[in-house]
Length: 110
Length: 126
Image (cartoon, rainbow over all chains, first blue to last red):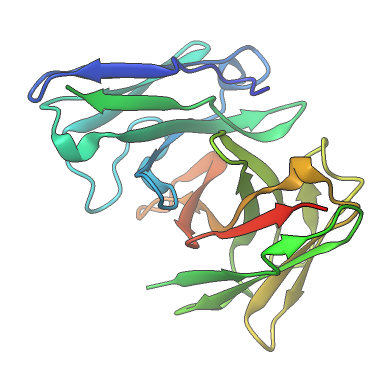
């Protein structure tokens, strides 16, 4: 059972904006640890999408953005595209359990 | 660029010891930290542990009694051993590089994982 909670699924029509929350506590995100986000396309390994709460690695479209506040973080996808249909995971650190991933969110493009 | 490739047994019996190797190309394992992460079928990601370039390790508390990681710098490989496996250890196992610095040298805590290997499926079944 992960200490970082994400909604199991979110959906949106092409072109719309969706957001994914990552809710933690005072022993992880709330303790000041950074949050990173990954995208996992079906049958593939996860790939880094956002690092350090809000930074995009080279090659990641600017449709993806991240933010962090208090004990939570969020990933936003604007201008949703069919190719964005995937699973998304947040990642941080917990003082009890070490490196932790969120429970994961499946994004469906309607 | 750095690429990682896992190799392992595929199918195992309960109580055996799982041994996985990650071969790193395009860069030396003598820098950075290196992690193992797994994903049970249809489930989320679980961090197993990391090893740093000095050979120091840090394991997930839920697995630390069964896990050991090691380096083979001559082959540019690092390895994972997980003993006394059960069906609950059935998963795709990924190796990944830990990265904590951006291009400006700013350090983040914790590190993130990039790149990842393609993963190798390990099935534990009698």
